Amino acid sequence: MSNIIPPALVRRLGNLAGFDTVAFESVHEREGGVTSIRINPAKASKLDLASLDRVPWCDNGFYLPDRPIFTLDPLFHAGCYYVQEASSMFIAHAIKTLALDGQPVVALDLCAAPGGKSTLLNTYLHPDSLLIANEILKARATVLADNLVRWGQANTIVTNNDPSAFRHLPGYVDIMLVDAPCSGSGMFRKDHDAITEWSEAAVLLCSERQRRILADSLPALKEGGILLYSTCSYSVEENEEIADWLCENQGMEPLGIPINESWGIEQTLSDKHACPGYRFYPHKLRGEGFFLAAFRKKGPQPSFDRRKLKTEKNSMPKELESWIREFGAFTAFTVGSDLHILPKSREVDLRIVQDMLYLRNAGTRVGKLVRGELIPAHDFALSVEQSPGIPKLALDREQALEYLRKGNLSLMHDRNGWALATYEDVPLGWVKILPNRINNYYPKEWRIATL
Image (cartoon, rainbow, N blue to C red; front, side):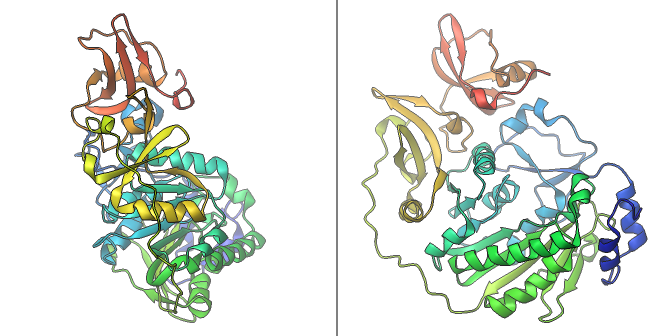
């Protein structure tokens, strides 16, 4: 087995309390891993969950008996669930047990792509919170924005910045999640390329990069704010040693997270400051390798000047009143010719973030107003803020897949105008019904390949 799993890694892990070398090597000999999904409670769907095992540390997480072709499930494209590794769903448990969901907050997911943890935060934080989801790489920021569009919430801003940019927002965020780029040993079962790329030198390089990312971005965390730090690495240099460094150099104090012994999570304590860390081993639970530690910022932190900013006089166009569920709860703003909505309570935050960061997306893109008529955007088709009175065109599974391929729909209909194409009562996108045809407005860049 040492021919596959790097011997240097196994040797280092063998010194850790609770680590079973034989069981660890054995589980990596078996092909395949665990497939799990996390449902979107904001989107009522007819997913059959009764027969599925629940992820014990996440009430919205479920294990699948095998891995289906998600591309052929319209509910996947509708944002009814996210395919997420079960171990990383532990963040939901951390939010609950640390009581981070009790009041509205500004949360920053610093290394957010592809979006699993951002969509989780959007579900578990207080609904009046603002989530800033950041990704430094442009292509990955696009994927992140698309996944958050599918999730359907309007209280999200997607940014495309280096972590150092957040120094310009000192003391601005209440909660920061840093799922740091790492050497990837926790994903060996799912990504065999990670095995060949792993080395002790790569671990040290990642550890240095993790320190830089944290040092650059932590000024944005307010005094008393909470840091959730995670990796998909087993290496102490990227986990417990980073925890000690945070306490010694960044004014952080460790926080414990209560866990159930039956879950199989291994709690560790760092050498210098006894920081609790939570390790996930695939031979002890149904999930891949993962590490999480939580901290509170105790050091003094100069705060961002929240003097009253002059916000633009944004008003909601009356044309949107019949489209949006809680019309009065939102403010509208334009990005180019596109109209977006954001919760009215976050209007000042939008201005602050616009002034300091590069935005990839903000709120929910609703569409364009052309001569007083709304030409709706695809993003709004997936929003949870639609008015229930918007006309719908119900599709069966084959029709839904044809729609997602951007094919032609030949259906009987008794109305004209814009309508939501739905599958099992969940919107997939827009159609425009004309007297002699139905125009398919599913985005070209999102269409699925013919299988």
